[in-house]
Length: 255
Ligand SMILES: Nc1ncnc2c1ncn2[C@@H]1O[C@H](COP(=O)(O)OP(=O)(O)OP(=O)(O)O)[C@@H](O)[C@H]1O
Ligand SMILES: [Mg+2]
Image (cartoon, rainbow, N blue to C red; front, side, top):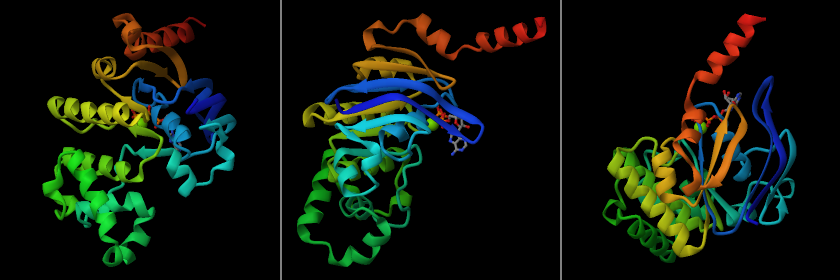
């Protein structure tokens, strides 16, 4: 298994972001996490990526307890995270943001940029080529479109070359056609390189089209966990509709 969550929960102060849930993701699997805003998608992805520790329960990444994997090279070999906010350095050229995947911290990178070996530049070039923006190599990242910045973030992950990719709303800021392009690229890379892929999405249609398995989250709980083909419109309606809140209010009013 690439990821195992065993009765994992996460609270921020008095806010429960995730109630205890268990989940296993096999190596090479593609999993989409869907659900309304605030459902806990980012929290779940951050637990899988080792970005945050659970409040209770255990997280295992490639058979290793997360507690034994501090942020660093070893964790970076296992899992790469594409954050909802991309974490690119706007004033650096695309190629330098991509190389940050190799060198870790960009603060470190900044002092090393002039010393980077040609071999590393080749890696960055190959990654930018693969995501289709080789011609933007020396463009300042701030001047790239949202879709191009998404590709720079993906190229950075390719250079990092982790066993699993965790992508938080990788297509949130893209128009429908570019969203499809990026998902095709992302799922193609996962398939061709045998990487596990977990991504959160707002579009259930895209989740069904590009992922093998879909997990629905609602208010920090697992609403469903199904093969993509088994997710019906009823599942989706129930996940997103506001009726349940209306029900809660009605119950409260009746008391
Ligand atoms: N650092 C934090 N401190 C306090 N509360 C937080 C923190 N991060 C998340 N939360 C809360 O936890 C809950 C789940 O948040 P999360 O970001 O995981 O949702 P999400 O499904 O990713 O939403 P979105 O679709 O808007 O990105 C929310 O109620 C949120 O306010
Ligand atoms: Mg989120």
